[in-house]
Image 1 (cartoon, rainbow over the protein chains, first blue to last red):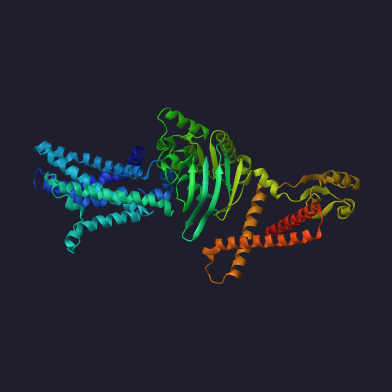
Image 2: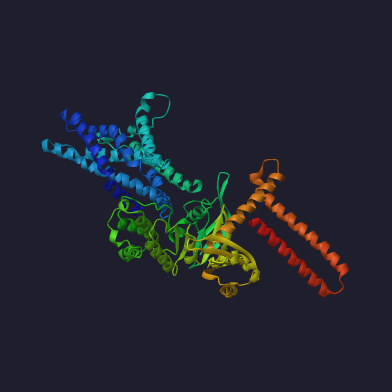
Length: 227
Length: 395
């Protein structure tokens, strides 16, 4: 798992993908930093992370995940993965954590807004850290879905579109009121921005992540039979 | 080292590999031969655990690849067909990655990577990105990736495709060198390569094993007639009458007339007769100058073509028989059963014939010796008949 993680993480930053993802995230953050924090002259950064998650995830997650397995399948390097002694679980976790690491780097870079505010006032670091933890958790859930989408097709574009569609749909399904239980990822990101860790919002994204990681592992193992 | 037992791979109703069995000993170099789509790569992919067989068992160094994949895969270094590589990595990074992934003990890590690069001639390009390499170098990177963890079994799918002649000889000698310590399976379209490198050859056609033998034995199997090629200068056109002077000649055939007024003939003699000395003497007496004389050798290529053709013909005949016998339309599924039934019937018939013959013999002959002799004769006749049938099938 560790070798896969290292290789994947490296290739994110050998290719433009890693920089693009961090760049877009910081751009979205900057926009909402201005619209919320600066405009309202507040020292609250929670709403910055809330809006960054609301609008940012649907852009950055597909970019991160669409190539994960689709590219391997297209280039034939899937053969190298499946014939290596590393089990499928190791491969999937390695790739998952590599994508998480990119998000973590983006979040660390977003600490600069905290730094800027520190210059003028004394904001609460705990709220920022809790917001970041929550952001990481729902990103994990979104990544696991993107990874699953990538493992069912060999076309990166299709994998990306499936992920975007899912993320956008999950935003609006709340408003549709058609009796479907609320599966929006954002419903797990209501209390984090206020600096409160609720058990509900921790278990929710974690179980969602576990489910789609399991789906991906099962799907990849089944590839051996149908290939 | 590798046991393949009753392995079948189906894609829907299409049978890619049909019930194959073979065993590979430690230290052998085995070549897979077969036309396109014969099931070579499928078989190799199943041995490496990339795809799961529909039924059957594959055991590598005592570990079943389906049940204990991690241990079994650790014994294998695999160079896949079409050389899939991570284009974003440098050569050195890729080989190091491959080595780590195979969980080699951490000691002497760098040395092993270095050695793999030296063996495959990659030291000059070790810091280049793989996507910038030429096809030949990519091929070598893929090979280095298979070697680096020093596995017991090395599987190479078409290792010399896309290499220049110098590299081909280098890679061949590398494979031979590796064969001293490792078990190697390779597939190739180049038959001379296989006959040079491999101890044993497995010929696959339409998902079934047609032959498993050493290259030499396969070549000997197809040498049937004694043909000699001679290129002569024959100004007085004496070759037309030479058949009268030269006894034992079955066939004399003009193959080509060259620009320098020499002619190439093929002379066929009866089996077991070597005409070369005779030709030399007779031609000298007749005033025909020999420019070149060569005995026709059967190569692995001939053996391959014969075996594949024989198999195809046999299947055609069987299919025709089936069509005439069965009109219900459930042919595909019952194909095998029908074959078995047919074989059974044939055996029964033969058995009955033998009984009748034996009864006749008993009534006619008086001494045991005579009986035995006659039985032997009949057996011989039968053998000849079946031999003729086979030949007929091949044609």
